[in-house]
Amino acid sequence: MPLLKPGLRLYKTALDQAAQEALRDELRELLRDAPLFRPAMPRSGNPFSVRMSNCGPLGWVSDISGYRYQAHHPETGRPWPPMPESLLALWRAFSECDLAPDACLINFYDEQARMGAHQDRDEADFSAPILSISLGDSCRFRYGGDKRRDRSESIRLDSGDILVFGGPARLMFHGVDRILPGTSTLLDPDGRINLTLRRAK
Ligand code: MD6
Ligand code: FE
Image (cartoon, rainbow, N blue to C red; front, side, top):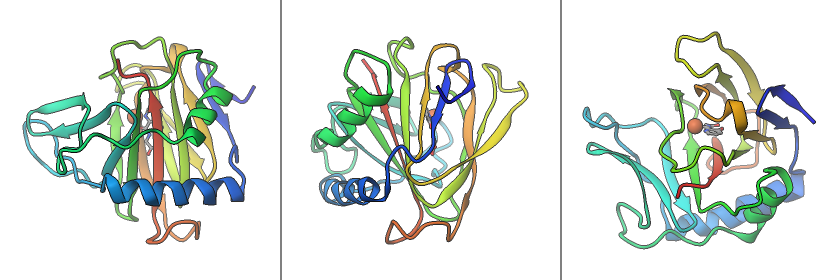
């Protein structure tokens, strides 16, 4: 098992080129129904550099009033599109969790976008892992410990990689230091997509 530290597993190129292209095409369709939106930070209202959407029964959103999971898109008001069967199959194959995910956050990074260090703790139950899929340009992904000040290290995530964090790593701080532009031709416009499948409720 490809263990980076207890609870943190990295599967390099879990999706081959054909699977990456098929998933990209499904996402392109899905984002027509649930367009990327730009979330804002709670309190300050500062915009994120990452744009987001979701699929599945619940979606993660952030605006001036806070972070939460909700059943509808914040701009269209429509329910999130269903989670594609291909994503549910990846969850079954890699999560080592018997219960199905009910939320999938879709993050889109252009070459300037970053994700500051954070913990994912808006879910009701931390016993389920989060499964993350990378598509498109590579990035430097940083992860540390349960406290912001804990020592951290960075790894490169490439298109087709799957990262699963659960168990003792479920509440670790992590973020995206930078995108490595020009490292993939999968997406048009280019950039990076990260999908995170979760159990929110
Ligand atoms: C990213 N990922 O890779 C950001 N969160 O773009 C995350 O924030 C993340 O990879 C929870 C679990 C896995 C992740
Ligand atoms: Fe996260």
